Image 1 (cartoon, helix red, strand yellow):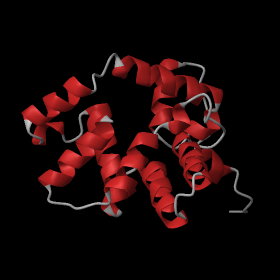
Image 2 (cartoon, rainbow, N blue to C red):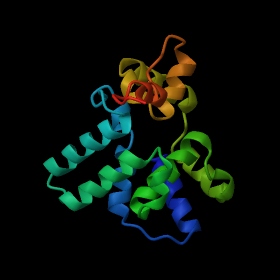
Image 3 (spheres, rainbow, N blue to C red):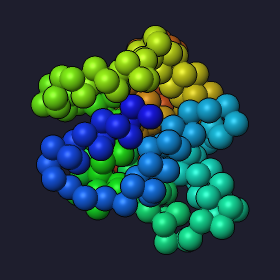
Image 4 (cartoon, rainbow, N blue to C red):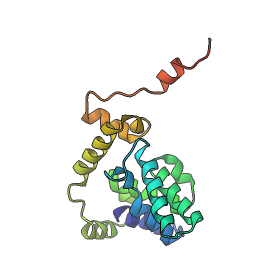
Length: 175
């Protein structure tokens, strides 16, 4: 919920209009890939996007709208989301504000207080790192290209996955 409200505050501040239904669903479902039920071998944001699309479409939600929700979830941890339509970009902006403070200093302090009062963080920093660490260590390959790798490397000294240098070195070309 904080992701939704922070994103909506950012939209209001920048006079951005958006489809509230799509934006809300993308925010409400954006971390499905961090749950035990929906975690898997794909990056958590893709796992979550896939689960959200399946859930929405099984309830008859239109395919086009489901795709926008999918995009908002799949792109939310990456800068590319900021270059997409508001229903997508605001998920990333709202999540970044919730997780690392993002644009919180530019938002009205009273509004930020109201969001935090209505939806307390309740140990979020610790729990978020623990949950991400558990998923990254269970599915190490899925974490290699995102902030999840940072968390895995910080919380598990034994964590090691190949990177782009390894892929370049092992490419099947003579030099």
